[in-house]
Amino acid sequence: MANARVTVHPEARIDRIEPEVHGHFSEHLGRCVYDGLYTDDTAGEDGFRTDVLELLSDLDIPVLRWPGGCFADDYHWEDGVGPQEDRPRRRNLFWAQGRDDVPEESNAFGTDEFLQFCERVGTKPYLAANVGSGDPQEAADWMEYCGYDGDTELADRRRENGHEEPYEVPFWGVGNENWGCGGQMSPEQYAREYRRFATYMGSMDNLMLDYDVDLIACGFEGHEWNRRFLEEVASGRWGVDFPLDHITLHHYYGRAMTVSESDEDDYDELLVEALEMEEHIERIASAVDAAASTRDIGVIIDEWGTWHPEAVPENGLEQPGTVLDALSAAAVLDIFNHNADVMTMSNIAQTVNVLQCLVETDGDDAWARPTYRVFDLYAPHKANEAVTTTVDAPTRDVERKDDDLPLVGASASVSEDGETYVTVTNLDCREGHSVEVEVDGGVTADDVADAQVLFEGQDAGLHVDADNADEFVAEDLDVDVADGVLTVDLDASTVAAIT
Ligand code: AHR
View 1 (cartoon, protein in one colour):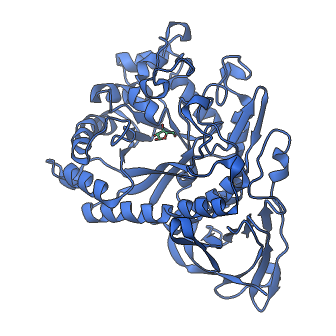
View 2: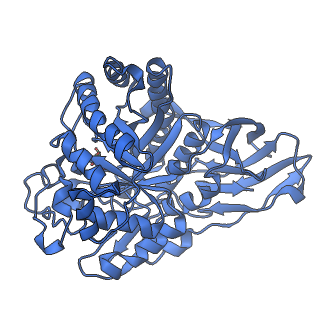
């Protein structure tokens, strides 16, 4: 007997799921860039790790944000261009934090390395400019170095450094967490800085580049900060028509849950925190609605994912990768689908080795974590039209959060060819659930083209390492069809996808 029901309305379109919503973030932090994307030991061509490059290319990642994070607001891009042997060694103020155990920044991986890495992976770059300790000229110069095709000193410098053609960098962040590590600014103060930076960065976009650039402002968790920021931005001479294409916030969860000592109550708590993403999106979208009556400003979540107590600056924010983390990613990707009308991008933190990375490395080994498998399973949603999907499922009271955890989650989308793609997650880490999936108009067994499931028979707390990484791949899922309705039996903590 099914105890949960997912109802999909293919005609009730929400909006296109921007492929960038499945985006990524890499910061100069711990082993994300050095050892992760790049190695000084030249394991791969030109120092790139070809194993990681292949894993990311296979996933067809749509966008990669760099160089931070907090690193960005103490990073000066000119340190990282030109002959590597001439680049200065620095200590990044935020991530070095004056400790001896944090390596200095060699600047071996700089703008050209990052942009060429993106070219090889086939992903769009998203650069975060330094607002906290930088100035608008530095940001505009960076744009010119990367993207100008004319005959200026900066464009020529890029050519001398080996890239004749301009790089296309469609996304530029105006700082990072400027309410915190990026300068401890009030919303009004950041708004004034934003206007100053965007005046020059917007002019670069309009006058000097042959492609369109989107400028991204930093927001905060909560309606009020974002409302005050947007109001102050709009109080300038250009009003709301100011160059501001997206606003972003960060949402991490799981800080109370030490992976090695956790139990099922902790899992429930983490999942409730992950689901708070919905409220963050609603709050920031309502601030945008209130401020931007004449134009669209997209919502970006450019850092998100689990952050467990194991991940501390001393170990470069590394933590074990688990099925539970992957489950939370599925729940969040479903929320992004439900909010496709406002979401323009997201960037899970961080691509390799750091926090909820998708890929982990150890010496010459590189492997996919369970979260990678979820992104892979969800990939067919990219560029589809999200459609209204309702879930009627049992809930569990999570006392510590004073909230209920819905035990089943789902989302659905329709491709250009009219194919419906439904993802269903059993967020219950204790028990299996039988889920009916009803699609308006009904379905027959012949309509089911494919059905797959992740993590069947695996415990939510199971860690991935080099030896067991292959055990997390998707398997075929049995689907029963009767009276026009599909039924799937989902083990505890599993993620399914039905085409
Ligand atoms: O991803 C790690 C850090 O978390 C980033 O540097 C910062 O933006 C956020 O607080």
